[in-house]
Image: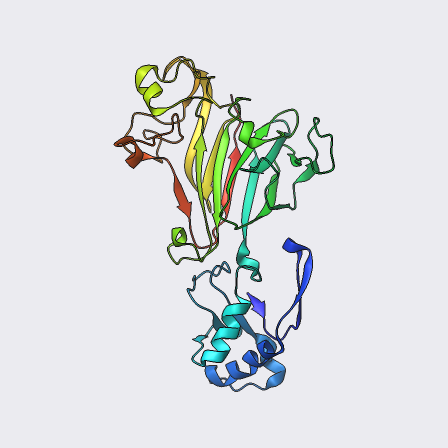
Length: 321
């Protein structure tokens, strides 16, 4: 949410200044009449413009005005003012273009976390409190992928731009992984994400959202090879650390070791759900991708879901193997 009377706004996510059109200040004055409040212009700052995907407790699907003192909301009926509000709420301007991600380290030692997009570069992330920024040991150029150290017992809070690009989080115990899109070759647990703006159909008109899953798929595993021998000779499971992923405070998927031969010789984690289940998200169901699951009927049971309405995505790296 943003105060309408502010004519100069700073958005750290893009490290730039942008100016609201002069007419946007008039929205606050118009809102006084629309809300029927006995206010004068000095109280215009009490009105806020609420945009779709702003993380409001009651998600909205179109720009609205809210009186902060009463909580009363009003939609725009004037076409011109509604157009100005819609433009101001565009994904390029709205603070809600960033999703909050919290990464908690419950291990007894520090962990090192990276966030990479499918172009093998650091994703559009702002590391905040609890995140100690580092460069991987293999970095040799100014444009190298960065990562963070999270000390034991600490929660790192970050913001990710909702650009609808495929991305991954991964972690290690010695240094930030150089590229989470090489995680399979390095046997690292992958948390796969797509952060989408509220305008994308995948968010179901609930504001901005993030699709997520856990993957331990071996590097050259296919559906056919899983059916043949559970991907026995395809590089070994992509697993190094146990992790739980939650939308808000409710865990959705949990994947833990130790690795074993429970599901074949690829050393999959033993407590990661049942890859042969026809359900997902509970201990007896599938909690991570053991194989691609592209083909029917398996594709109906993929352990992939969406965190809607600007809720916080939480990754918890757990103790144990």
